Each structure stands twice: as C-alpha cells, then as structure tokens.
Amino acid sequence: MSKSQAHYNNVVRAKIKERFSYANDHQIPKVSKIILSMSCGEAVGDSKAPARAAEELTLIAGQRAIVTRAKKSEAGFKIRQGMPLGCVVTLRGQRMYEFMDRLVYIAMPRIRDFRGINPKSFDGQGNYAFGIKEHIVFPEINYDRVEKVRGFNIVLSTTASNDEEARVLLQELNFPFKQN
Image (cartoon, rainbow, N blue to C red):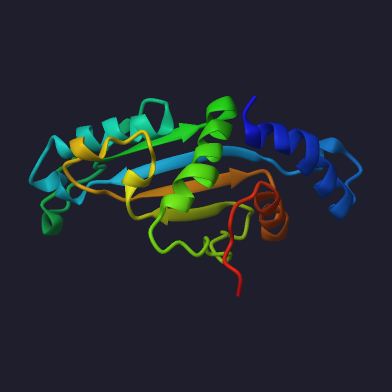
C-alpha cells in the first residue's frame, strides 16, 4: 500500500467525515482516477513524435499510454483524419496512488520556481486539472535521452459533489496549494 493510500484510509477519511458530518462512509469523497494527457504540436512534421511522447508518458505513469489520433481533418493546421497527435493514460487504484506519491513528494518539489498549484482550477464538480511544463521533473525520465522537453496535463477526478469537498480532500492528501 502506498503512502498516500494509507494516509487516506487511516487519517483523511475520518477528518473529512467529521468535518462535513457525513452519515454514511460511502459519502466520503475519494480520488477515483488520474488522467495524464500529452499533446504533440510537432506531430504535423514528425509522425514519430507522438510515439516518443507515449514512451515517455508510459515511463512517468507506470502504465502504457495510448496514442490519440485526429478525429477529423483540419486544413488550417495541416492535420488529416487519423493522424497521431498525442497520448493519454488513465490511472486507477494502486497505480493512481503510487503516481500521486511521486507527483506530490518527488516531482512537484523539483519544478522550477514552484510556489504551489492554483486553488482555482476546480471545474465546479469536484475535479481538479493542472499542467506541468516540463516532464523531466519526474525521476523516471533520463534527461540525456530526451529529444524535446514536453509538458502534459493532469486531471484528478474525484467523487466529491462540489469544489469545497474536493479542495479539502486534496489538501488533506498533501497537495501544495498556493497561499493567497
């Protein structure tokens, strides 16, 4: 069991249940999945770029990334239908908690000029999304083998019914929010 999962089960659930005075344990919010997505703008000129990005995202996530393809052609961007454009991976269960540990305790402290994540990036339904500008902050990435530094998006999907519950959940899971 990972550090975040043990902390959630032993400490966070009790705190949230007491704070929001839930009658049922199933009402307590939890992180249901984490979605990592990476787009490759250079895919128009280099068709192998999404495959390289998928390899790097696979190393970061610990689970194989899927290459995403264009749904329709767009002449202005020189994109054809079916052209590979990026990659995505969805983490659940044990891998999700292991990734959360590496994100909070290893990767975020390595981000240059990091002051915390934006507390306003909730979507109104209890989900939180943010981006990382350099994927090389993860220790799984060998800096010498990287051809291009890429950024990617992270979406934390929770079972919380509103943003306040999700904010408390993520704060209790030690996510570093900016202080106003």
